[in-house]
Image (cartoon, rainbow, N blue to C red; front, side):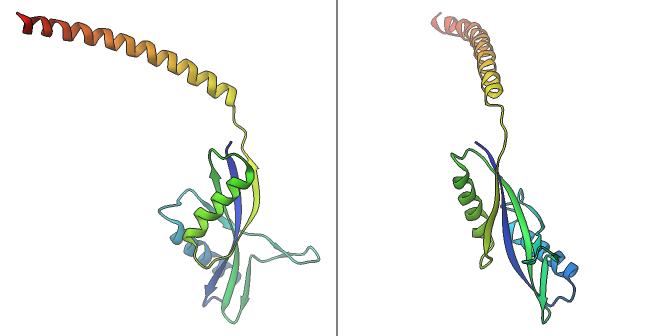
Length: 152
């Protein structure tokens, strides 16, 4: 089973004056920490809401320092269950983002056509075996005359 995992990160940014500047710097800083090892992780602005449901900026600025909410999205392959996928995502991202708190927001199971993949794999295996047999037959023709020449 494959899963898409979305993790929220609280990234601190220093010497900023506007929320837009804080978000740009936080995305750049996070990208630098994740790349080149995790260049497949998508980074986007997080969403914040007040307790009353009001939409807030993704960056909270106080005294030229900001805490920016970012969402990091990655796909985890060959997991047994959703909990396993979330643990893998947190571990992989958390190892590169030291001292940045992470929280799993969403785990979505990706649809896969297991039956179609199995049928395609079986047909590819059969085609590969027949091709190997043909190649082996050709190789036998090439090897035998040389062997006969050695005997003479």
